[in-house]
Every structure is written in structure tokens, then in C-alpha cells.
Length: 352
Image (tube, rainbow, N blue to C red; front, side, top):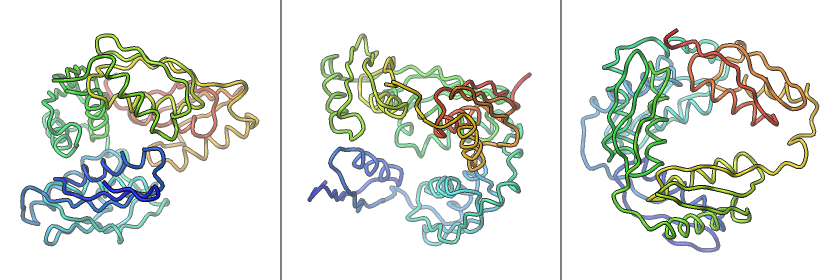
């Protein structure tokens, strides 16, 4: 790591693109950083034939619940992947790019992968929730675990019953527990995840050391540096107290703490400071913004959701395809300016 005038240059070598992205993301989160130049080299620890890489990428795209693999063509030459075709959003393009970085890949070219929002209506979104055998679903989840820098070195047990995934076993950090759940939720054929993973760090600092580490992280963070946050640790469980200015900051504080070794759970008691309504918009304006936010979301079918607003409180009724879409619809409402969200959406895919 080298820093000059707030510009960070990263050099070195890692085994995967996911690790390269992780060190860049962490560098960008440090207060005072104005730019990051990532010159880290990805040097896979194994060589694989192009045909094998291509087959694995096709499978990875097909198993992602948010990508229509039928609209994306894959080719591989000397470890360099080319993705050609059409996707319905920039988010979907980004996911395809990330999924293509399987073991043995040197680089991924998405210059010929066009974003056309009009194709969202043509996407085989319903196909993504087709019931697949429990065995193949579990295999797909394990495959995704291998390429996560958080989960790849953990022994997570996966049981699947009628689309319901149960994660069990021991992991060494709370971040690993959350990441494993997110990966499972984004797998085709999964409609619900029960996360029974237990966080058991092999080694970790004393309680005072945990608080000191998290305090240092917060003080270096551009969003949380000026916030009044106090902490208490009891048997590895972290309690957060104080006030922040937004729901984003509240969530960020818990997420950053979950990465610290020794933290096995987070009780987020932070309150969002609001002296008045979070927005000065009228209810009808909030409603229009929520509708627009959902219409542009690649994960939510806005035509199946009814939005009502009263005194800044957004109520969502209707039906979504899975639990992940239900969560995202609520997030869309908050991003559009809702003071509070009443999520009354029904989930279509899953046992009656």
C-alpha cells in the first residue's frame, strides 16, 4: 500500500478477483482516501482448459436468480472470458461480470454485453424460481461458496428441503455467517434460508480490544467518524448505542462491526436522529418516487405491488416471487424517501 495526497496505490498478488475487489473496497472506505489505483495482480493457483471454465461460467449464470442466462453468450480464450448479449440493468451486468470470475480466469470482457431496460419484460424471471431438486440446489450453493473470500475457507453445512435452505456448522466471523446466507438467497430454486450458523472465532482479542478495534474503524470511516456511538461487549456479543443521521449509517455500523474478529453477534440499538419527517415531500410525491424506484429495480415486479402512503408511511401490498424480492421492495421504498415502511407483501414461491 502506498499513499500520496490521499491517492492509494495497491500492489501485490492475490489468488482471486474477489480478493482483489475486497482490498479495493476496504481501501475506499477509509476516511481521507480520494482515489484508489488497484494494481493488484490476480494469479490463479491453477490452470484450467478454456472449455472447462466456459462450462462452469454457464452454470454459474444459470444458477443466479437475478440473471437471465439465456440472453448472455459466453466464450473463453486463454483464460480470458467474453460475455456477449443483453441484460436488463446495470446491476445485472455487474452480477454477470462477477459470476464469470471463476477459478482459472485471468480477465472478463463485458464490452459487448449491452444494457437494455426494455428486455426486462422478456426475461425469464419466473423460470428462475422453478423448483429444482434439493441436491442440485445444494451443489450450486457449495459452488458459490468456493469463490467467496469470506466463506471459501469455512465448513458450512447445507441442507435443502423443498427450496428451504438450512445453514449449519461453525464459522469464524459474523461477516462469514451473513455472507453465506446472502449467497444462498441468491441461488435459483431457493425461496427461504434458515441461518443456524454459529460464530466461533478460533482466536480473538479481549472485549476491550474488540471495542478499541471497532472504534478505530469508525473513526477512519467518512460516514461514522463524527457520530456518537458507544459500545459494550459481553461474551462476544456487541451492543451498539447512540444516534446516527440515517438508516444507511445504522446499517453500515453493524456491517463494519461484523467483520471484526471476536464479534459473534451484534445488537444494533442505534437510533436514527429525526426531528421531523425525513422528507418534506407530500405523500403523493413519495408514492410516485417509490413506484419509480421499483420500476427501475431488476429484482422487483412493480406491477404486482400496490403502494399507498399516509403521513410518510409507505404500505406495500401484493405479491412477490421470493423473500429476497420482498426485502428489496422494502429497501426501494426507503431509498425513495419513506419515513417508515409497512411491508405486507405475500411471497408466492414456497410451501403453502
